[in-house]
Amino acid sequence: MVDASSFRFACPKCGSASSYGITRSNTASYSREGQWDDRIFACMCGKRLYGEAIREEYDRQWGAAEARLEEVRARRRRRAVERKKARKEAEEKAHLAEQCAWKDCKNRARSSSKYCSRTCSNRNARHRHKVRKKEKT
Image 1 (cartoon, rainbow, N blue to C red):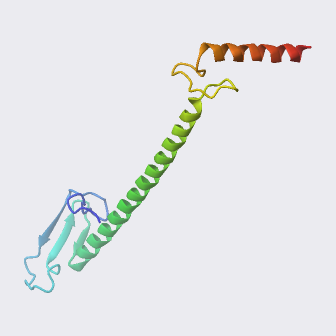
Image 2 (image 1 turned 90 degrees about the horizontal axis):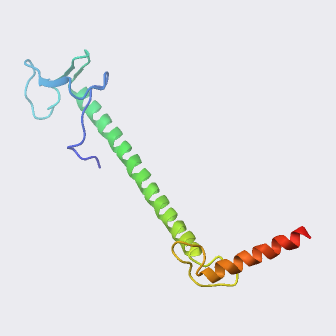
Image 3 (image 1 turned 90 degrees about the vertical axis):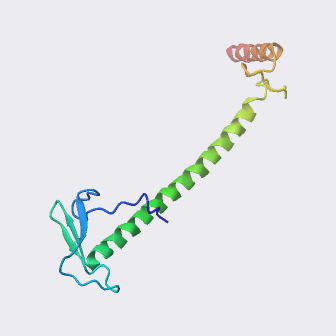
């Protein structure tokens, strides 16, 4: 539902929300049934609406505003779901990254390294050196 304080009726021709006026006709009769019958919409661009046409245009614009608001809400819901999913994936990656990179070690890595200790780092370096040495021969 559109908030009445945020909705601005606009001229259907120029789109201005401030350069128009809705007045009562001097010659119209004042009856309760047709409260819009004596109204005149006049914009500075030259557009004029009379009677029920004002109410119909108002209802059309109100419906369009509600549709836009629903689109915005749906987009926000989708973004929230996407952010939640991304956050969950990042947490999973962070959990995997927290484990020591040495293949035989299951300890948690230090905050500034991918290894849990200098020993695991050296083991990995020696292992890579042996692998490269075997590939050369």
